[in-house]
Picture 1: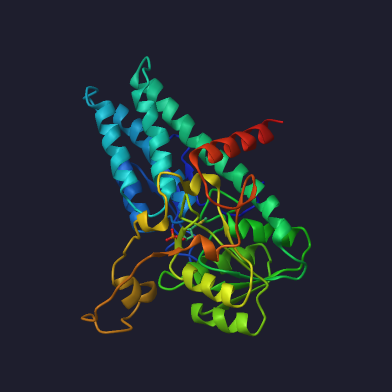
Picture 2: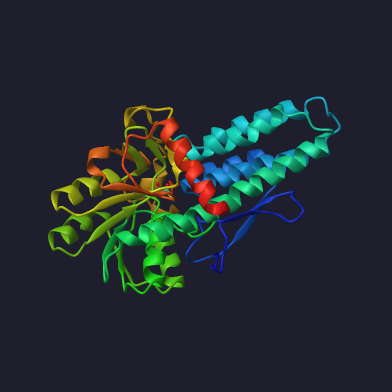
Length: 360
Ligand SMILES: CSC[C@H]1O[C@H](OP(=O)(O)O)[C@H](O)[C@@H]1O
């Protein structure tokens, strides 16, 4: 399935570091860096060396595995599991909005309560679980791409926000995975790429990914989206998700709500493309989702360059917003196009359906 000339994250062969493509340096520089502890990985997630809901979860899983390996060399075996629990806390707290961080850490943390013959055996189990989570991500995204492709009309002009491709996941991506499948299935699509201020994930990352896959695209400023819809140049909106509440309210990159409102006004289909794992059945609505607020410099100094306003300027920099379920046409997942509400029982049944599909 994977056919990229890059990878976003992987566990080093010797399991002593997490290797990540530094997405802050793209598109000009393709630089991989190694992170040798849970705290280094947590900082990399916080600083958005790696970013994108699914991939930060996978990176956190690898971070716990690397920490388990690192602590084996420490003399004090007494605090081994305690230190690993602290590592889980650190990684889980690195960014608040994407639910993937918490469910991956929760799944890894479960192993800390299992009896193993030795710390080495526990470390091996953590490495295996983190690697399984990464391989599951690729298979789920590929399935999402195949199912989502049915939504894409021939010669569609698709509006996309942020980056939801192989850089935001282990491979294929979510919304960009669907777009990629539309392209490879010969639908002659075109993508309007919103630059996605302030971190410019669209301009820097999505254009880079689409160019590598020779997918026709045009970069626009975020504020041009409404005009393109008004000019009837948009057939479909596809975006990702960081956390979906039980009622379908969705947290995604800032600007998603604006796009959804405009799509509704212009009667354009607006779909969230997301794995089931990004649906948080512990919360009823979007009101319960914490929106990450990031530093002022991301707005004041785009790409870290010169100031666009005085340093004393008051800045508000929410990294996400909440789109009400009523503005969303549907949720493209690995088990098909879904409608809320999403209960734990429904999700468990759907996940079992997916598992039986991949087994058969
Ligand atoms: C595959 S969905 C990725 C999701 O994460 C992005 O946020 P960030 O770049 O801040 O990690 C954005 O919300 C995307 O939709």
